[in-house]
Amino acid sequence: MLDSLHQPLETGAVMVAHVNAPVNYPARDQLIAAVNPCRCGYLDDPARACSRAPRCAANYQAKISGPLFHRIDLQVEVPEVSAAGLADAEPSGASVIRTNAQADGKLLEKVAAPDEAGRAMLGEAVDKTGLSARGYHRVLRAARTLADLKGVDGV
Image (cartoon, rainbow, N blue to C red; front, side, top):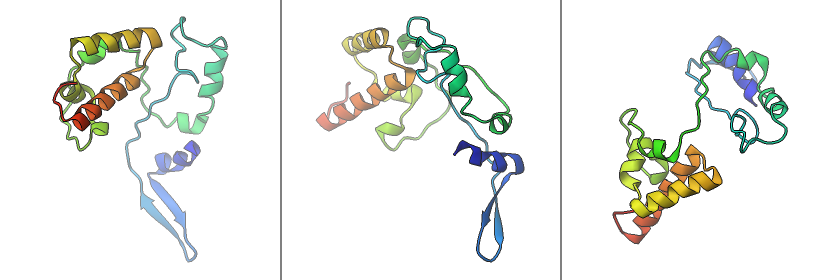
């Protein structure tokens, strides 16, 4: 499926074969993607990495074909962020939200910031379970939704 992006990224167009004639559609878009370093996502964490590392990582990363991989201009490794780091993150730009599921980063911290007891419990969960940044934000979104259902401002 990913390999279907190879041609549009190269040519900037998508060709669709119709009965009468092929039709080209412009496809000059910016591709931004994220991928874990290995199947479990803990390659760089000796405490949580699977026993098959680094071979597991090589096999997992090989799923992205060379032609597609070579069309990704910038590749950045992003280290894991602690619970405290997630809570203290600076805003990266303006955001308009429609639902709790669409809230992100600093805005999520603003509308779903837990009280001290909640922050302590969430920090403990991150430490004990290895909750990822995505998981941390999912917990905040769920907490905000539960608070909304109860009709309360605080989380």
